[in-house]
Structures are given as C-alpha cells and as structure tokens.
Image 1: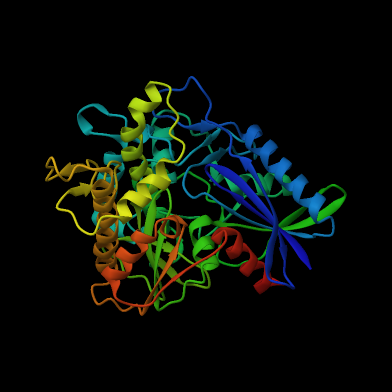
Image 2: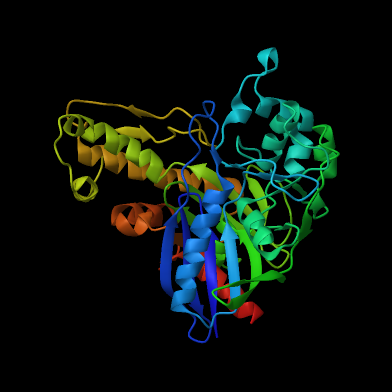
Length: 434
C-alpha cells in the first residue's frame, strides 16, 4: 500500500510517497513556501492563503503522478501563527506566520503586547500552558488582533496546515494536540479557557481538539480520492521519525536547535512543554543558537569579498577544515545573536592577535553550542535520567567536530538519524494506522 505525505514547513512544502510495505520514503518533492506579502508594517509577516494553496496543489499533483494508486494523505505542519476564520467559515485573515513580530510593538507606557499577555497570565497560568509564549504564538496574535478590532464576532482559528486540509475536505478545521502549542491547559488536556478569558478572548470559538490519529475527511485529485490524516506538529513528527525513545535525550540541530525528551506526565519547569503522541508530553527547550547564528559569522567573514564581487564558493568547507585543525583556544564565542532562552545579544570575547582566526573562531562557536546543549539538558532533568542521546537535523553530520564535542559533554551512547525525520515520522504514523 502506498500513501502520500506532506509537510507544510516555513521555508518549503515537502512531500513524498510512503511505501508502507517496504517502510520507505520515496519520490520526494519540494515546493517553496510562498514569500510574505510586501508593503506591510515593519515586523509583520503575512502570507497569501491562495499562494500557499497553489504550492500545496502542485506538490500533491506531482506526488499523485508518482503514485496514482495512493489513497491516503498524512500531513504535518509548522506550529504557531494563525489563520482567522469567521462565523460563516470563510478566512478573515491571511496566514499570519509564527515569524510575525507585531506583538513586540509598544503599547505606550505598558510595554509590548507580548508583555501585556504575560502580565495578564502571571507565572502560574503560563506554567500550566507549558511556558509557551513567543512573538508569533497564536494566543499573542489573537490578543493583538482583538485589541485592533480585527477579530470578527464568532471567529475561530487554525494553523495553516489545518486550514488547508479542512478547506480541501469541506469540513470544519480541527486541531491535533501536537499543534495546540501554548493553548492547552496541560493539567486537564483541554483548551485553557481561563487563559483566553484573561485576555478578553472568551468569545472566541475553539476548534475541536483531538489526540487521536483519525481521518479528518477526504477529497479528490487527479481522479483519486484521498483520505486525509492530520495535521500534526512538525517537531513531534520529526522526533517520532528520529525514533526518540523515552530513555533518550534529543538534540535537533539545524537552522535553530532544540533539546527535548518524552515524558509520561506533565511537570512544569525551566522549559517548554508540548503534547506528544499517545498521551505523552514533550519537554523541550527551543530557539537555541545553531545554523542561523553560525551564518552571522560566515556573513561577516565573507562580506568584503561579496561587496567586491569576488566569489566565495566553498566557505563552509573551508571553515569546517580550518576548525578541525584547532585543538584548543581561549577565544570565547556566545552565539545568542537572536532572542532565545540563552539571551539575545551574543559576542566574541578574549580576543588576541594570535587567536582571532577562522579556525579558532568556529572551534569556539562549536564548543559553545555543545556547552549550551549540556546546560539545557540539565534544565530538562538535573538527574540526567536519559541513557543515550539522539542527534537529528543534519548539522552535526556535516560538522564532525561538533559531534565529537557533544559526545565529550554527555559521555553516553550517541546515535544519528538519516533521512528527513518529519517525513519518516509521517511514515511511522501511516504504518501504525494502516
């Protein structure tokens, strides 16, 4: 039996054919996630729904050309952000991305809109929500929209993937618990209505939430009827695809990075908590410096050459090679160039005329990453109850020195995943429901 998989990501829309009998991900396709609409206010990040729909349609059309016998579609998608839907079921907004920063706008003497949300909730409510509150969080965006009169009476909300699937199937959007980040009361498993009430959002209509993996509906394309499952949170799908076990610690290292572990019960702490599959929870620390921060250093090193029209074709290969030649340095690098749990202002310290080299700079940067993961793992569980570490995301594979540094910080078995973890997670879900 063959099925289709679709991941509506923030940079690309990926798809694949899932061969359930062979347990294989085949015939992958990729379409760009549409660029944001131009001409909006600074910090706003909105995307045309019709543009996203077109790219999804192109991806599905290509997949059905590879597998015309496929009769199921399994979908994952980016968490956060929002599509507002009015009382008649029509979209009342573009897709407002999780990258949107409007909640950081000033409210005058009262700080930002995000500050106002935090004050309304207090520490106890925020903890019961899993300590989830980012600039592009659904709750923060709803609060901003309501304060600006942009939330219609009787409105509901959906993730971008949930909206697209429901619209295609002709049903009301639902939301799997893996998508409901920062909106569930983890003590009860239901929508945190008290948290919404504190933001004066009590009249919002909540979509049906579910922790089951069951068909949402169906639609036809290319003369083939597809039964639709999903959408599921992309982080949880990726960790399922990585085969994360309860006794393992996950380090996902890519553009950004996360440290995560599966747990059976909700226990708030110095980390975020999200719902996982099968009634479990995912304790995680996100927005840790990784590839995006490393690229800040790369851009600095190549800026003059680029400005003078000189090609720098193998910058990363050279960086990895030069760093591998270094065994130690007293140069210190803090990669927290973007806001996250480790700060928002990075730096380079202890500079001398001898140590400010490409090799020592990136040796120090890789060392800082490994130290960050060890520190955040301690926040997740100071008892270090895990027995092994699983690496995913690809960056550690392309930088063997980083992998060795991580191994040196954890002193336990370490395994790496191969392939696209999110699509592999959808494959595992498909095989479990076949």
